[in-house]
Image (cartoon, rainbow, N blue to C red):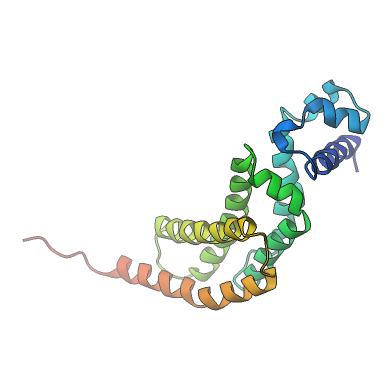
Length: 196
């Protein structure tokens, strides 16, 4: 592992540790570099600000972890990993949710979920005549529903086990991707109604 990556990981660990007891807006670059025995220039060599570090943490720890779960057969595993990451990093994620950095959590959740859902939509629609715009609309719809579910679960104190939520999601969504895509395909194949 490169020294640059080790430095980033040290700064990430310092931020996550600080976020277990302090709100994000009370944490400064000075706190983080002091915790790591680094100077401010080293921080700014790697990150523009604390928010960029926050985004890097979500990308490297969570987004990359579900890279292999983007198929129709494995999408529930991908969602379970998202829930588990949030559960395992509870203080960090809740602090992000309740801070000015909420947009970073929203962005992380949207990007990781949309990437996963879009992969499933593309797989299921292979061989169908479905417009790319309709595929994107369907993926966006499910992405917003899933991210809303995750945020609601976090706000409610994460009481329900992730496995239970995934089971409910799986039952709810089973077959819906195919049905929606078939309707889009049917719409695309229909001859236009003539105007008289």
